[in-house]
Length: 396
Image (cartoon, rainbow, N blue to C red):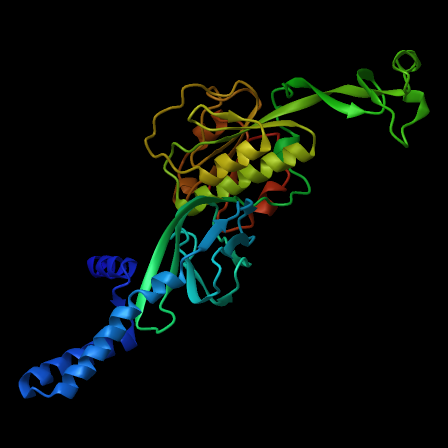
């Protein structure tokens, strides 16, 4: 089947793939020619010749109909899972003649959506048609595709011609971010061992503090910020820009990708990592994402991009280094407390059979563990108060 489709696309690129009407006319022309050779009737030769000439002309006209038509694909803004992906394609006619009746097909990534199509009835010389459409995004990921096709059988509609354009693009779908009102597992991180978050200085613009630079006065600036000595030197008013140094708490969200995950549980863990990171930023923490590949990302675009493309690595090989600060460890199996930094927390996704087993010793040595039930609301479980007096008992 794929071979036949490939042959059909090859004929279409040469303008030799007949449409339904073209196939009927070609069969009729062959039938009349065969009848003419048997009966030696001249009028049959004339009719078959006219039909074949019309078919030959029909193989050239669609190619001319697409001359001068160009397509430009605009960059696609990233979205979160569940939000529609906005795609925009600009179709322009640079020819001096109008272009009629052609089809534009955007192949799309197979894992994202089916090919999108639009039929344009008329495009004037110099006219640009903005083709906008939205694609649902039920799942996170990084989707790349390049194929965009122009197809036409106009004006006779007997043969199809296609022109394939290479317009590579990438659509990034971030994981869903849950709107957490509170998150005790982050708010109490480090409390159990008495070790608190590390502090790092953060410099922010402010209306008070130390002078960062001088700039020209703008209407509305407070007069108390005018630096009179510099203003007298330059002959114009100069205003001080101030900055304030504050302390920011550090938190590391670690996702254990090198484990035997269930697909549904892993997707929940990615959503949890994105939500915890977003919550930490809203609270003013210096948040970072750590992956077993050795990556430690702090900038928001880099973190969301990494979470959009992260996949399960079932190799089971241990990571080269572990975070040395209190960490929220997202994993399908609990880990010994001696492996993680003191005061860390663990979010564990496990099957009911695993939770029903006798793992009290492992649970007791792994610090505070929050078991995540995949069939319950993840947002509600992240907002549930953590019991800091003793670890959660591993039981059915």
